[in-house]
Amino acid sequence: MDDKLHGRAAQSDAIRKRAQAEMKSIGIDDVLISVLVEAFYARVLLHAQLGPVFDAKLAGRWPDHMEKMKSFWSALAFRSGAYGGKPVQAHLGVANMTPELFPQWLELFAATVEEIVPTEEARAWFTATADRIARSLAISLFYNPALDDPALKQY
Ligand code: HEM
Image 1: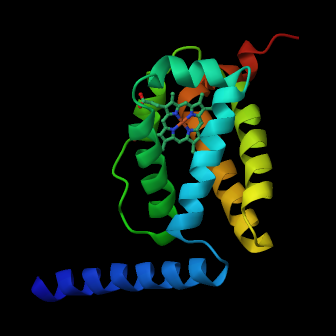
Image 2 (image 1 turned 90 degrees about the horizontal axis):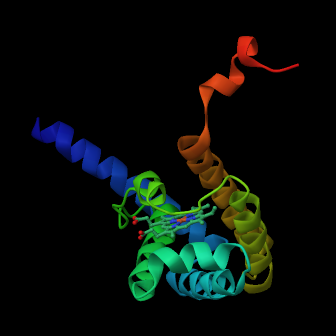
């Protein structure tokens, strides 16, 4: 039992070390994540469609949100386990959330990454990771199996 636990701890330690080395080699660190997150949400607030949806939910709580988003990206990059939130549940409580907002979020994120992130590999990592999570969030929030049922399709 003890051996098993030690084995698992050693394995996650190895995964973390590998992630840290990989991120370091492409130029991603916590300072870059912090700058990117600050720049992105500053733009979100100025965005005609995204801004009001975010601010309606986060007015008075922005500093908390920024800290959460930094630990979210840091946990993804370094496999640190630093973020323990529940993104699907958090978005279920967002008023006026629509599928059309996702491409706009992703476009704004990619434009911010393009300006802020210095290496091609790091840019690719941020945009691919955001695409993947956005897709899975959108499926969790909006997927309706009935729309896939051929018997229900309108011709
Ligand atoms: C359609 C686009 C999106 C909108 C309008 C949106 C809006 C929001 C809002 C308003 C919150 C704050 C919830 C609260 O604290 O009450 C939030 C939290 C969060 N969002 Fe999004 N979001 C979007 C897309 C994304 C995407 C693509 C990602 C990931 C790449 C993401 C990751 C997160 C995370 C990690 C949190 C914190 C959840 C928690 O632990 O409380 N969001 N989002």
